[in-house]
Length: 87
Image 1 (tube, rainbow, N blue to C red):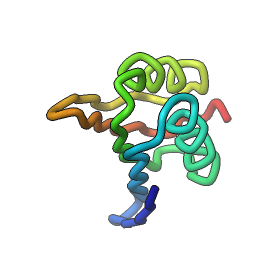
Image 2: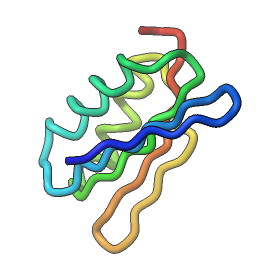
Image 3: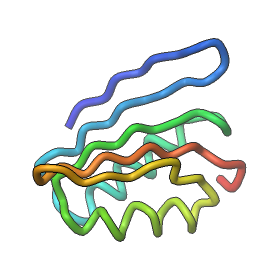
Image 4: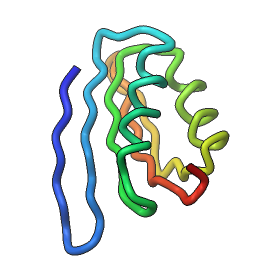
């Protein structure tokens, strides 16, 4: 698992690579990363857990975050989540 941070004029995007981790760890790690962000900041999550295709959108809804995009290609799932004002 690795993490990087980049900032544009007002939006911070953190990348979290959870490749190799299985449920519930990608959801747990994503939740921790989102908790450290400000509303409007974004998390780019990379995972290889096929269950994340259902788990990550559900987590975003429950937290009040916005799932901007989600894709699956070659065994890797990538999500872009914008932190909402919920938590």
